[in-house]
Length: 296
Image (cartoon, rainbow, N blue to C red; front, side, top):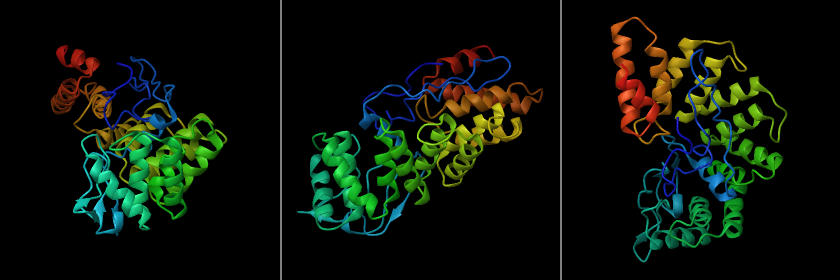
């Protein structure tokens, strides 16, 4: 499997996606090492903490206006405006005018506006990158119980693992599945909290239940390896399938992992499904999946 998975310019070049992913440990494969976090700038480490490929929050009054979807792969729906320009989630395609609308909303008292403006400052999306200013704005949102903001702060405090775990805990308590998964990783590694695999399983289960699909996949890895839980390959397969998403070579990692289990079956239906999953992962650029598909 390849190293850092995703285009560096992508929104998803984040701490979750900066983990080196290899196939989960099986008798005939290399042990997974996705817990290794690449040395990255704190801001890049934080990006993952707002990852959720499928987690959608409905925030009433976001940016001072109507409820919106905060799915990170899509711009926010129009809310409050500044001279007719709506505040929108700062992805790579959002003009600076939309970020200025979020700034205005934040200054007008919108917690969601502060969260989104802080994200823009943190990542340099539609605004000049300024981690100090981002921290100040995100802290304001976190103090007002915005779970995503708390999780983002925890993401770029990796140099202070105890405080990072505290912020991730706040985000998880508030319902941010990504933050729950980050806290699970902290318990897996014993960073900022005592190492406790059973608690890692519990937080990763919560992440999955909150709709964070990568959390489902990482939970599946724990079941496959018997890490903090009794080994259960069937449960691992179900979780890998739940975490599988069409997309880049990181999103499709769980697809390949599910296929690795399915292809061991003697049932033609399972083997056909494995080949379909390998083809999906191969199309996304996963070389190992291409090799397995070609060798079918």
